[in-house]
Image (tube, helix red, strand yellow):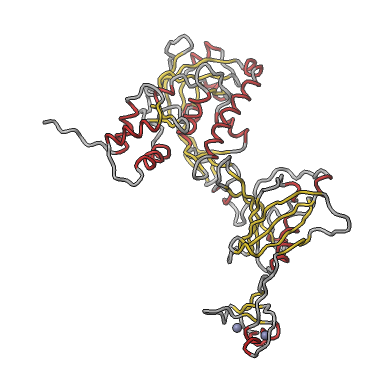
Length: 474
Ligand SMILES: [Zn+2]
Ligand SMILES: [Zn+2]
């Protein structure tokens, strides 16, 4: 009796998907995979769904949206993209396929397996060449392998010049066959509006995928390929190359060529070359509209881990984050001898997940400040937005600041101010209590506190003068 070789989970998924003749419901695929590859996992369907969505390489299948998967080779047929010819390429009669065909050129294909056809379907003569060049990167000199396809004759015949576009259509993704068509730079120029629209469609699709992912990044290859299948398949007119479009759009980047992340998330490049962290790149400092400088931003501020302790802070649009830090320290009784920082909490799409964007480091000492000059009015805050404020990066005392309203200032009020605070529930000095007196405690002795809190009034605190005391926040 012939024994069937036991397939692994991934092999089973690939087998099921390869039998499809078009996009299929991910739920149906999961059912079939589980039929062939039974598992005793707690939530087999859920586990399988997240495995397929997150870990299956684009080589075998693409997750097209929440509901659909498809075999990659099948849906990649007809995908179009644009390559703008550089001066070096025009003069040398070649295309830098290593860069511009990245992801579109199936990784499993052996080096030589790439071929091009012209608009009529005739094979374009040429050779693939690999050259090493020394390049200056953030970590010093490195060797870059340049993969070029030399097709000087076709370039000459088509009259290809700098800034012309080559419109590429995937004929056969599995075999690495592409169709090329020249578009003169003047034509591209005339069709700018369509290109801008196509770029927006592609980038919005990718951004949506990023916003809806569990982590704050997505794998670039499956996302870029699926984005093209959904937005740039024949007969769609191709927008800019996705890397150019992404650079112009500015919301995301793909600096490692492997993952797509929020552009305002920190990247390793932020920490290079200097001992001091670089300033976060911020939009140019623009003078604020006079209307917003006077507006009063009312924040409901509370300790993240003790919401009973809250303050209502009013601060104007013209005040900067250092002013905000000063009033918050005052409001919550923090010393001036530690650093503090602000983050903006940004809701990710329509999900209930937030990501945090670094705004500023604040300090009583100017030399430690970073971006503390940003004015409240310049942060583009809306009612309901949240900021995170941390006092002391060692003890990490975290506060949440909710923007309750933006209103006109009252006459004769000086801002910023603490407009309101929680009703204090005062506690008494334990040493006075032992003597039968009732005195309000002001200090908390960290040194003496063991199983019960050692709370002291000003007078009794004097006898703990070499102890570590903290002022009690009410
Ligand atoms: Zn006392
Ligand atoms: Zn003590």
